[in-house]
Image (cartoon, rainbow, N blue to C red):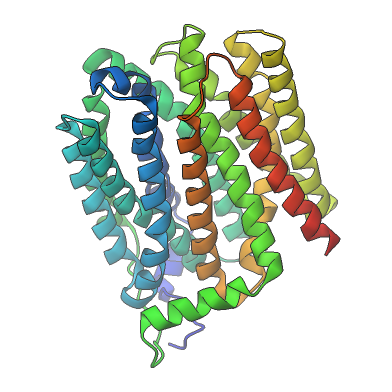
Length: 403
């Protein structure tokens, strides 16, 4: 096999049309986001449970996100060297053990450490899952599967917050981590039994670590790549600020853990619709117009939400309804931005995806942590923070298209 060959053999490609294979891949990729968001409804109670402030509670989320993003840089090259499945199984094992440790947390430091370890393990499911999609599918079929991935990831936050809130109310916050501790080995069995084996390509004389840094240095010299990464990172931070701040704002509006998911789902559901429209309109509109439309919808939704907050309207619908526009805008914006990121240097698509994923998670973690440093008696501070990140994405897009 040459270095440019696929990671998989012909039998794997023959199975690539199986709906069960696609479902297996989607479940693996979605696990990390499920682990990230299932406990969100419980976060508004952790301050009282562990006798700590909101900034320390937010660290449980930010720590997960940093580990989840950073370890993708390691899992990617290792999966190129040793094959996809072994790294996926190791990551799921780590995530399962970390989830079990979180069940028995007695203070916020223990819980934060368990969440960081959980993010470190879950990172494998995202980067290896996406790499398998690249390995197993070709042409329009690959694009279609990636659209399924986008829609699945859009569904996870609202469904997880709804489920997590119900579990919290009925069995306590620890039960959410118990669910993840059971799900991780179940997914490992599904991966072991249902995913095709892959073999690494013929390696060069360079050590994998040296080759990895060489690829990353090459990407850092590409201004277009960097601008695409800024757009994705700032857009992700806008969403993570929403995820981290919305439960606090909604608590002030009288919404408890079992009701948060109904309002948080506004952004992911409209994001799914935006992804669907992108798949239908991208050929006619083109990348530039599609991304511009995404920015217009995003900024319009945020301006309306902020205006309602400044007017003193303290109603959960005053947050959820305007952000339908934001979710739809992100659905138009993200797919062409992701395609642009990996398309600048096609030979380094895997490394490009890892860098973009890392920066998305780091910027998102920063935004989520900043949420805990300001008050959220209403939606005004949340709106300003989200608008700031969105304006950064819009500026990067303006510079990109001027080039």
